[in-house]
Amino acid sequence: MVYFTDTYGIYKNEWYTQTNNTERSGMIYGGMSTQDIELLKLMKSKGKLIITEFNSIGSPTHLDTRRKFEDLFAMRWTGWIGRFLRT
Image 1 (cartoon, one colour):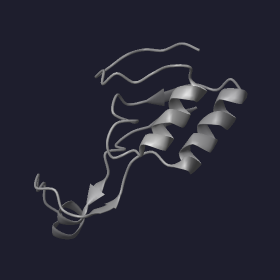
Image 2 (cartoon, one colour; image 1 turned 120 degrees about the vertical axis):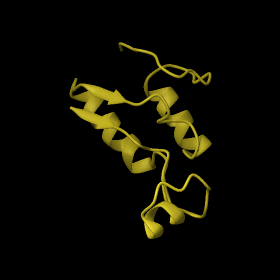
Image 3 (spheres, one colour; image 1 turned 30 degrees about the horizontal axis):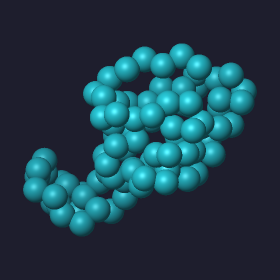
C-alpha cells in the first residue's frame, strides 16, 4: 500500500521558524515528483492499494507530473476536493 499526504510542500517560514506561519515564503520542497509517479506505476502494476489526498496533483505539483498521474489513472483533474476512484 502507498499513501500520499501533505504534498502541498514545506516552506522556509514553516520549517525554520517552526511556527504555523501561513505567509508563503520560499519552498524547500513540495508537490508530487517524477519519482513518486514511478512508485505509483510500480504499485499499480502489482495491484496494490493506492491512496492520495485530494490535493496531491494540485499546486505545487508541476503540470507535467500531474499529466503523468492523470494518464496513469485514466482521469482528468478538474479541481475537485475529494473523490474515490477505482481502477
